[in-house]
Length: 311
Length: 274
Image 1: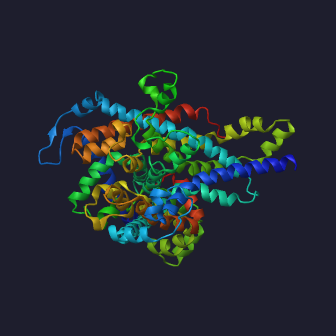
Image 2: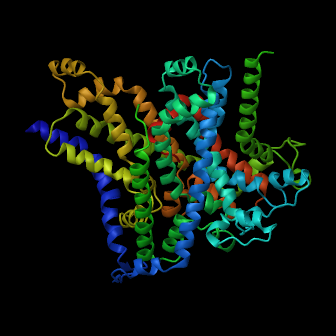
Image 3: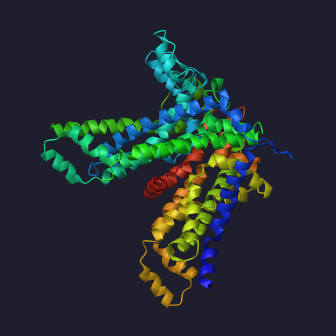
């Protein structure tokens, strides 16, 4: 009897913290998403009207589109480069491998705010190093953080083709933020892939070599399939984290970018709540946006899981 | 030169090129931070400052209380880490070794908090902290993160690998659960505790969103918040911005160079970043 009481005492501190700062807020947030409230004394119950207003709001769907651009921009590139680097760094008998791993992981531990400061300087229109490089190759300087044109549209401009809006791609400003995301994620993907590669027995490759398989074939038939659980993990992880990008957006484009083209979901959410005091509306937005992530994550798990090989 | 040598040379070339790209933003911020104003406007692309100077660093500390920001971040990160270790040790021990009604359900509920996105919680968390009168205080910055499911789960998994025999010996010696935790489990779990500490410290140091919501006064700003707001203030030039950036990044990079293994392990296992 006494023992049992001790057990409850042991979990009490954690339970209190999680209860007060996680469970209660979750319920509370759900409740205020059905109200209209600016923190004043009167809170009006408005039913589903916040959700209804969101579904017909072009601004909201734009922010969803920009967030999707960001996720689709960061994810595949980080995964491919991360896998490539992991393959290069796989052989730990190679000299300097530890040194390179240290370097590639450095951006992961760097705060997104500091990284965003560094990138703002590199992509400064007049004094930035990026435009200096372009200039030294004879190109025109780019207004990186103030250009709202979609990057795919810019490519097609020279052929005089006007792409449908969704295919115009992230604005130049959002592309810079995507580059920052890639830079920060590569090291993470590399380290996770390295761990995955370590789990593949060397004997598989030897057997393949005896059967006459070349590098490309054993990569396709052994490495990729056996890494699929790692890829799935990274896919889910990066999707969830990229959906929540906020800090770099706020530092690099404090107003939400040229024509609001960097206003990703969390940026808009923050703005609605803490700049316009529309707490009910913002809460509804949070629930709507994150039920989307939940659905995407579940779909990734369900459909890709089938194609994943667990040895 | 054999074929193997050529492959190796190509490998190194690719790795080196990649390393230069990854390092460039660090180098560029560092180099700019030592440049004179003249340099930045007339020689902005020089790889090295023509006349290295500390003046940017000096003016950063005089224009904004960066010393105070660093201190705040240290207090918050250390406090958060310490409390998470305490709450995680206690509850992980209960979940790993004690029998009590509702153990599985409570554990599942704890784990479920990992799935709740921060952004859903931020508005009510803000309201709760304000109502508790903890806005703009260290408590307000620390307490919401005094326990997390990630640390508890990670430590519980580790505790479960500790052989029962160790504990039995201690029980025979008449030790209660608190002493068993203190003298058996904690000493045996040092690597796991180090991993958690490093990870939590880094996460807390780099956290921006929460301080942005609840900090009001200049004196309570953490380094990330201070840096971000420094950017929005007028009359500051790029050499100073970069000096501020270096100041905010250096502590965590030094820690990373000292405890690289724990960093990599902590971040990959918990799958969360700043």
